[in-house]
Image 1: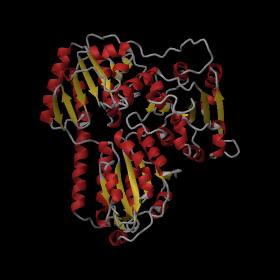
Image 2: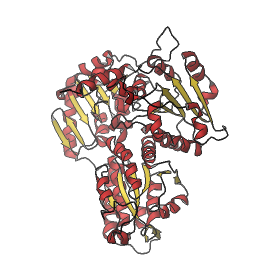
Image 3: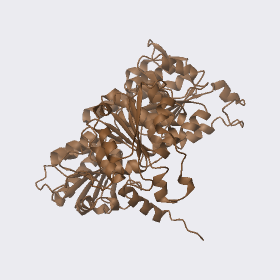
Image 4: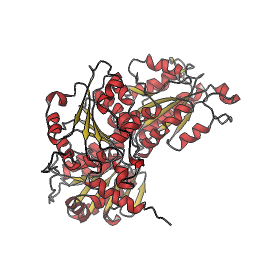
Length: 591
């Protein structure tokens, strides 16, 4: 790790030097091809987006590229969701989105905001008018008609950590490298403009010889040594009564391996927050399940909150991730590890990142002498005296269907809450947008996730989505059919927005939706002759089990949609408890 970090610093300095001096004799390359070459180096194989007249010249280069494929989405919002899902599954890479000026980029901005909120590395490329037009400011289509050509840049500044505004070929390579480095080191979206008249201008390819590093800057060795001493002292004082609590940023900032090494060596119990589900092996005897504050299972709540010391890795304390902020863990018993700082009880140490710190800590710690018991994380199939597919029955039954290396995508609502208590097989990957919570996100994200799963050798991609959520983004099923992807899509038909009904307005019409013929959908959206897909409706426990036990269905040889008929006002217990807490926080008061 130390040698990798040192090499990354050397490469950063070399890039800075390249910016300051010109090199002769190197091959010339189009600005557009320079960008594509950088993306190829970062293992990008798919570009999501919608064609528009300000990006078509660049799209010629994309379509002719040997290893980067153009996906082509139904709309820009879905494309942004696709890039997000791709980046979550294909770790050590990033998602890439291409839109046109103004109308395209504003349509995508909700998806980019979600990636920002949940720390997902996405590059948003906007094809923009030529530099001559940007200077003269004519009343072009896709403008606001008031000469504010920078309005969309100002919008992008709110939802990206870096903006590369290319204005000449001379600065293009440095700008591309800068924003890509910010994207992959900070795990957040960035924005890059690509003027039509600069795409085909030629620049030196010399910088491409220097790789971009995703490693953060090295920790200050003296401060890190002090922090390590303080942590080791607290660990010794805790006398092995310690719990590791893993959260979303352990995944986003690439310390999953470091966390697993820590657990393996020490034998400490480990729990995860909802946003970190699948970050550690859920079949491990030291894994205890999901901690969500006051709505946790009682035995999990007791084990976590009674520990003398909590090693919190990558915490992201949003409302739905913490049981509406009901963590009962005082700072005096907590050490927090983050990507760019460390908190030891009440003290914060800026610049001491967990990527370098965690391996150092593991080397200092010894195996626990007292192995505190961890109740097994299991899901029991309830014995219900009816044939209705209840939420309580559905999730543990589907859990028996999961296989190692499945990519499991759960929509905000009953799906994201229901699947939390279901153990996943080893090397499974879980996707859910728990913080941003834009309903319909999972449809586009499933498209990106399925592409990424192919790239990295994972298994099936399985989506759980409610009927209301799917109506927002359903067009992207056609992209899955078009590209011969084969996800399994469970549509939970509970006749509307169940999570909203629990939050407010159970009987209100605004939580109703129009009924659709779900089993006819795949034919309408691209499987014209019925050869690429299969659809099912299951209304009873027996029908559901028979389908899940069917070997051909489980093999996922084609895209499959399963309409699951469920009671309208049935919900997972965790969702009901969360909704009750949220309702108290957001109570509507009639004056």
